[in-house]
Length: 287
Ligand code: PMM
Picture 1: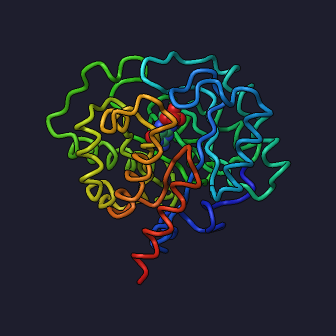
Picture 2 (picture 1 turned 135 degrees about the horizontal axis):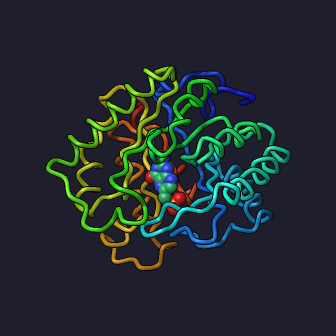
C-alpha cells in the first residue's frame, strides 16, 4: 500500500487542495516499453529506465509516471505478467535510489496498479478512466491515492482511424464528468480525482486544438486537470517536425497555453524545458 499520499511538492495534500494552491507539477514520462511512439525502446532496459528517472527528478520532475505498455496509436496490448515484469523492479529501484520520489503508475489493469502501489507508487494514471478493468474503481477507492481519469475514444489499436465527434469539447467534458461521478460512487474521494482530456487518444489535429483551446471546459468540472501533449503527432503536424525529439518547442507551447487555461499537471518527456517555461508562466500569474 502507498507510503505517502498527495502529489508532487504537496505531500499529504489532496489533489483538489493542490490545484487551489495555484502551483503546478511536472510529471516525467518513463516508458519501460520497446515500442512507445516518442522514445521507442530507449528505456526498455531497466538500468537505463532508472537512470532516466533519476535524470528527470534532477531536472525538476515532481512525479515519475512509469508505464509498461505502450498506448501509441496502433499498438497491441502486452500480457499482464510482462507488464508487471517491466514496471515493478523499476519502481523499486527508483525508490531505493530516491526514497522521496513520487511515482505514478500508468496502467489500466488493477493487478498492475496494485503491484505498483505495493512497490511504492502513490498515484494511479488510468488512460481508460476505470473502463479497462472492473477492479480498478474499487482499487482506487481502497488505495486512497490520487487517480488520473483520462478520456479516450475507442482503443489504442484503432482509435486514430477517422475519429468523429459532434462536439468534441462537450463530449469530452460530459465523459469526464460522468467518470468522476462513477469514481465517487465507487468510493473514491473527490479530493483524489484528476481529469485528463486525453490529447491524441482518438482525436484529429483539430480535435486536439479545440480541446486545448477550450480547456477551461474541462477545468470547470471542478477537478485538477492533467495534460499529456508531449511530443505528440499533432505537434509534429503543426511544426512539420518529423523528428519526434524536435517537438520539444511545440510541446512547451502546449504546456504554457494549458497552464494559462487552468491545467496544473503536465506529463512530459522533456522535463527541464517544460518546467522552466511553466516557472515563467507561474511567476507572471503571481505578480
Ligand atoms: N499519453 C500517453 C500515455 N499515457 N496518460 C495520461 N494521463 N495522459 C496522456 O496524454 C497519456 C498517458 C501516450 O504517450 P507516450 O507514449 O508518450 O507515453
